[in-house]
Image (spheres, rainbow, N blue to C red):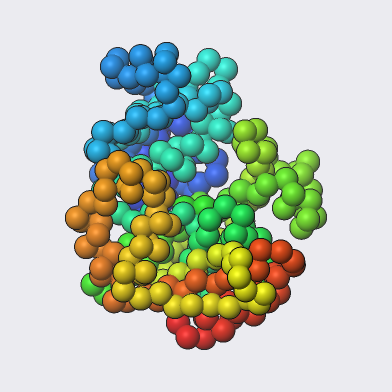
Length: 304
């Protein structure tokens, strides 16, 4: 079987499945992660039969099922076993490897994976986070219109070292909802349709993709405010800082409600707190505030 080598999230991946979204890299005898086509463990087959979608075992091993695509078993931060369905949608199979599959690998390694987008401004990374509906996709698109660089969409791996915190590039693809495709005049017929459940398209960003890790300048969390009529920002410190990191982790609910945050990951958050600033940028619940939010972000970036 052919094998393909990629550099994604700062890891070298060897895969038996071709992933067209990612850049191939040099062949190595010591990859960090293997993606193999095979059968999931027998003890998990009952879970699928009962209709379960996910199962985790303290993140040391994890399983999830994506209808129309495949079942995935992720083990000890090293291996992703993919069992495709008959006549599987391979675009969806690859999309789930790149998102949930590799993110679970990183979480098993106690590496911070944030739910947000990363863009490059003045050779530094800016992380844009926010709950659903807060406007992170729109703000990211607006910032990219300024010819800023693109590092990652939806999930961002942070590499925390004593020398600094770095955002790792993922792959040059941005996921867009149909209304964003229409609003920004992207030709839907020229985009790949990748997610029929959430009605999303894939926009390739090879022209502005930054394929190297960049130091993280700051993290911006977009919020909606019920009691303010103007856009404003607030720097987070202390317990608010740590709470914001946990709230914006990929699979944060699993950490908060089931497993707890591992000591190794919390230690990295404490290191991160001494090196990076986090700001919340609030906007009113109603009205078009995109320009005001961008102006407030510009003010924040001057402080970072």
